Amino acid sequence: MTTTAVRRGARITLLACTALALGAGGVLPAQAAPARPAAAHATADDEVNITQGQPVWGLDQRLRDLHQQNKSKSRGDYVQSLVNGLGPSLNGHYNLLVTVSDARFTHNLTGFRFRALVRKSSGVYYNIWVFESGDFQLQSDGGWSNWGFYGHGNRSGGNVSFQRVPGGEIQGEDGKCLDVAGSRAENGRAIQTYDCNNTNAQWWRREGSALRAGDLGNWCLDAAGASTGAQAQLWVCNGTPPQQWSYESGQLRNAQWGYCLDVPNGNTSNGSRLQMSACDGSDRQRFTIPGD
Image (cartoon, rainbow, N blue to C red; front, side, top):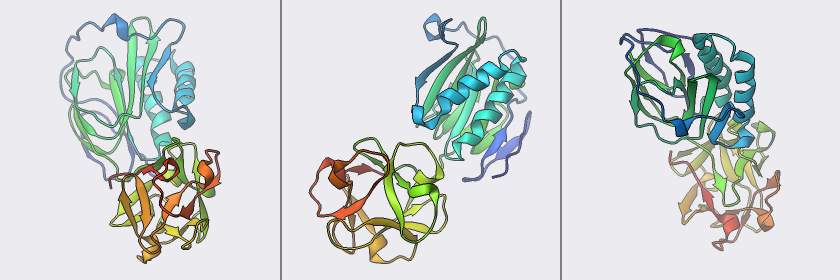
């Protein structure tokens, strides 16, 4: 993955699946900002206040480490450190925005996956947002000291239109994600449940009735047979019925065999290999899947 730092006055077009580190800044003059609501502050005992996020992603600890390492720097250097330190860890799946909390801005960002409020110094707070898509309009620029971002979209001055990356996690009722064991792309590779961690092994895309392991190449979710206990596996995409799935009432039903994807015995342990089983509507056969 190639990353490119860009700042001030440029118009940037980012292609989906190509992540660029985008510097802040534009051509709008700085403006006075309204007072920040006191209730939004992080506490003195916790300079990094995580308000939304999955700990297994590791973003919370990574943010705390970056904050401690860089909080004594100038505001501009601090923001750059956060953007360059957090952005690549998103694996190109989501967008990142860092903005001083008392800046004047509007947005309609959606699909938030992580949010934090960080106190850099007395009276200086930054929002850290990880999200899917939407528009952001900054009315008071100030360059890197006020904002920075990393992701996919189009920028003109203080306006950025962030794009959603196709695909996402397939998540079971237990909150675990479908995972390609060891992130290895090979025929017969196990499909297991694992803590959701935003790695390439857990990123899936719907292409017609196929479910493609989106970041691993030409590999699809495949049913090995038509009996309870037949394994779900990774296989090179070939368009055959064992790789065709219908999604109804939360169940993934295989077109070839008519059986459903199933977590054996509802086992919620990491590494539980998925299987095929007669469709019964139980929670162990219910999944949420990405829309594209």
